Image (tube, rainbow, N blue to C red):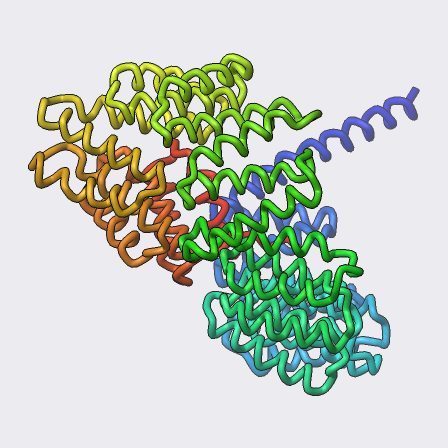
Length: 602
């Protein structure tokens, strides 16, 4: 019976101690997080003495440092070093105490002694470096790994660890140098290197550092293609697309490649709207001949790049006609089918918006509707495009009929809502503002954020500018300008917008006109005027429905076209702060974090 009582008592005692430790631990963490280091130190000392858990020690030691109890920390550490001579973290912690107390020489002596005393064991070097890292002695962690390389005679050893520390410290020079070292034997890390460098590089000066290092590396090791690829990447980051292309072609000729890497990079040029450079790249690939596996893809990509150049307003009429013929040749050679539907749609667009041949555009789209086995959603899109042609050819009733047909067929789907929005815009163009607003109000609940946002803006545009006869008449002129913009008659659209203030002074459309002009200038690549319009809107119209659009659009221009990431970052932050409910908020937050360097995943 006595033994049973003793057993019960010891179990109860153990349970009580465990419970008490849990309470003390929770309280210690709370004090530590609240920076109440005096109280935290008392509890952490108790916990560490009871358990010898190094997790408690780290916090206890840091608390002593924070409250400057250097003598107490030194005494405890010297005692621990005697008790546990194999635990390097206590010696490192003592060096940290000396460092914090201004005894730099003594600290360095301890640190260097620990490094020199490390045996030829990779794990021991990693453990010591980790101890330095835990106590924020990052340079000593680096020195440990460098010493390890000397001991083992291996310059590749501890590469990942050093990359991690340099990246954490944002030491651009050493991070570049280490990647030059690591990529020599592990070229598959190129994507990681690009992501890591992009996350900490702030301007072109940083890329110049990389460029210099790459030139030296290529000079020493011209056969290592990974460094040429990195050089091409850094040119693209600096938007020096033509230089990148020259490097690409030189590399392709040197390696007698199949053009795949060049083709993929040409797609990057296209995505960055470097259309002339992309066109040259695709044209070079075509010189490899029809036997090349990517010949057809390159030919199609070349034509599409020319199409994008047309849409950007960079082709003359003769070149546009030649491009239309190239699309026609695709349709003639391969027939009208699902595979060539892209060519048919783009041909119709050129015919309608650039060659002013609305009849041919109509016929082209109608022939597309007769193609067998085309998915219903594609048929719906063709019908919407046909409705747009009817608008251009002044057949509004035909356009409404087509739009409504698609809207009913695809009820509550994105394509159906798009058709319904086109119908609302058509009613806006012809001046039936009340009906256009009623349609827009229904679409404000669309599952597509873009359509919902456009519908909301249209609804507010109408309601905000029907308050007086003067504003209503001004809105009629604005609708005319919007119609000209839709028809791709940008000069007429600008002229109409400029005349609104003359005809109707002090109208309520000032901010709407600024945004409309900005969009036209962006379309025609007149970025200087676009920036002026957007800045004026942001500064002078704090309550405008277009202000969040303007903030995002201006930031996008500064980031992607004018190479001014710092100003872009400020605008993204302003958008997040001022318009938390904006549809642009999520994308702005993502870009802001990337530009700030938060995206540190490899």
